[in-house]
Structures are given as structure tokens and as C-alpha cells.
Image (cartoon, rainbow, N blue to C red; front, top):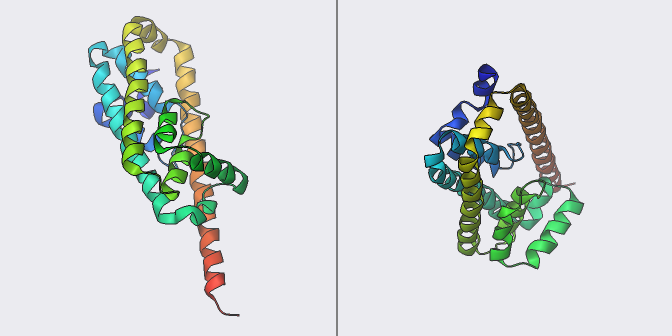
Length: 209
């Protein structure tokens, strides 16, 4: 159990690892639904007195990753978003962003998957939502979410630690690892193909008949 567990999550079960995982969780390629929440709960269960620190580090990492996604949205603009998502999904996101304030959009960070938060951050950047308001609200909502999870894990830590020693936990970690690997590869391939297709289209448009 320990071998499987630490081979996949060993680094992330450290203070620097929490920041890295939280940043990846807010990126466009890495795919692990509730991954940062899972790690935060495990760490808080092992070290109840440090739950507040893990929540803070997770928030910092989430802001770093979100800032990168927001910046990419700003760079590509609304017309460039088509390379990252389907037209039908993009239209829905653009309508929601257009009808919501930056504070409202960032506040959606408290909603767990399958809510497409990363796509919202990307679209918000492209729509030039006010960055300061967006990220101040995002930081507040994330720290609220992570503090709540960490406090609960610290309180019920003994039961969680017991579960970590079970066969069910070993199987769960293996499944989570598989989902992360397959999902990340699929996301990376999709992003590469869409970017390549967009580049070909731009070259075709620039080539005189």
C-alpha cells in the first residue's frame, strides 16, 4: 500500500508539493478531479495542527495556476478560444462570463468538479474581466474551501488514517493515478491537436491563392 501510495502522491504530500499540485489543478492540461482536495485532506489528517498551512499553500498554488490560465486567455483573446474547447461549450461560457461580474465568476471556485472552473478562468481572461477583482475574490473563496476541508480532516483525522491503511485506500489510489495519467495525456493531446489545427488554418489564410 505504501509503495503504490508514495510512488504517485509522495511528492505531493509535502508543503512544496501542495503548491505544485494546486497550480497544476488550475492549469489547462493536468487532469485529476478533486486531486488537490484529496491531498489536502490526507495531509491535514496526518498533521491536524498544520491544516491551516496546507490550506494556505493550496490557495497560493491555485492562484498561481489560475493566473497562468487567465494570462493565456488574455493572450489568445476571444477569437483564439476556439482552439481550446468546442464551439457549443465556448458559447455557453462566453454568455455566462458576459452576464456575470468578475467577483461572481471567481466565487465559482468554491464549486467542485465537474464544474469547468479552468475553462471559466480561460474565458474570463479572454473577455478581459477585471483581474484584481477576479483574483482577490478567487483567493478568498479558495481559502474558505480549503480551510473548511482541512479543518474537517483534522477533526476526523483518526478515521481517515485508519482508512489509509485499508485495501480500499490502495485501490482508490490506483484508480486516481490511472485517471490522472489517462486524463492528462488526453488533455495534452487534445490541446496539441487543436493548436496545430489552428496554426495550419492561420498559415492557409495567410497564403495568397
